[in-house]
Image (cartoon, rainbow, N blue to C red; front, side):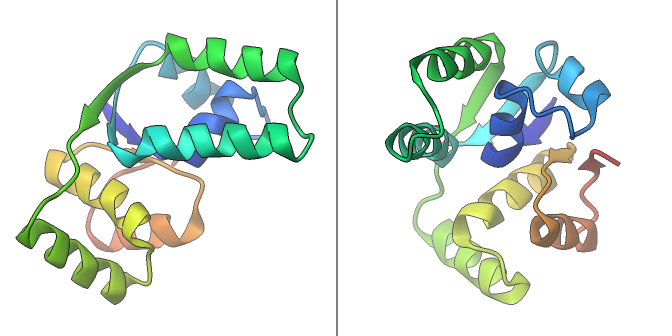
Length: 134
């Protein structure tokens, strides 16, 4: 089981092989866990790609088919005091609130975080979260 951020998932579904092939090849076999906003991030990135002419219908279909292969478990969004605590952690680390949710999920579950985002990697490492790719 691992947490995967939206940018890493999109790199996989678009088959961007400049990233770690071994990690990508294992994703279809892994149970992935994501914060609830992950789905909106994925949808927004695909929508933006189509609108900006970076994705045609075939490429969009390819991406959507690859997404269907992933075994994604969705964690509920925080509520109440958990939101305030998340804001404090995000401010302290310099992360966006969205990115903080990925790091926190991996931290709480004690599972690796798959991200290529440098700032998320620094924050995760400081909190003892295992990272992929290594």
